[in-house]
Image (cartoon, one colour):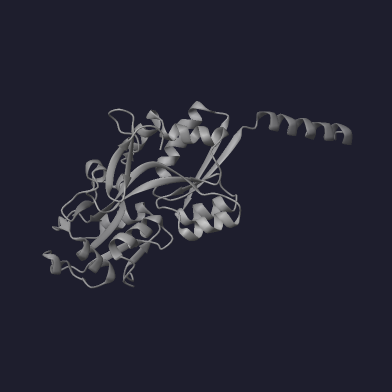
Amino acid sequence: MLLPKNALCVGIILSLLFSFAWAGERIVIQGSTTVLPLVQILAEKYMEKHPEVDISVSGGGSGVGITALLDGITDIAMSSREAKEKEVAEARARGKDLIPVVIAYDAIAVIVHPENPIDTLSLENLRRIYTGDIRSWKDLGGPPVPVVPISREFASGTFEVFNRVVLQKEELTPSALMLVSNLTILQEVSSSPGCIGYVGLGYVRETVKVVALEGVFPTKESVCLGQYPLARPLYLYLARPPEGSVGDFIAFALSEEGQYIVAEEGFIPVRAEENGDFLVVEGGDAHEKSGNP
């Protein structure tokens, strides 16, 4: 039996009103694949406490996240690097700000196959591997096996840091295998004896071997003391001062519970565990700063 037009219209209107009445707030987060799994867990825990808020989290890379933020597509951009000058200038040109919030610290771990006997590399030798000057592990005291350097793609924030610190902006060897995520690099290195790659500390698993840089392994202590050369903050970027559910989610990420999740996921908390102060790592120096970052 067909409903009269008026009844059908009333039904549609009531349905829409009902949907709006029950619709909660939506937060969209996009960007760095390094920060992605951490923020996914933070979002899950936050939504358990706030079922009225729906948080969507997706990757794409640091640059993609910042561009989406400036385009108004996302509410929060995840980034494993500091915003570039051209991104800050673009934000200003649009009448926006790029407001950084550091939610964790990370070390970029250099990884090789577990059977590789190399335990430590100098930054110079790591640079020579990735520029193509060193092509066999025999040149470094290892077996006569070809070196297969694996890198993140150019749009990656992790690559940006690696490029600045290790390559010092020299050209990456054309033979480098470019992969799109930490997980794909982890999988490739774990299955290929000649491979070398780099991933965020939170991604390290027993299937690979971590190599020390300049004799220093990536640990919470070495990062906090400014000893490990490939350390970096992990950011959430905003285009406006945090308020509402966005501000509440940021506060949760920086809370004791949120920072416990940071540590559980293998990253380094912003809050010092001993006294609740904030741990700040800048320019290779670490110090404690009371209060909010």
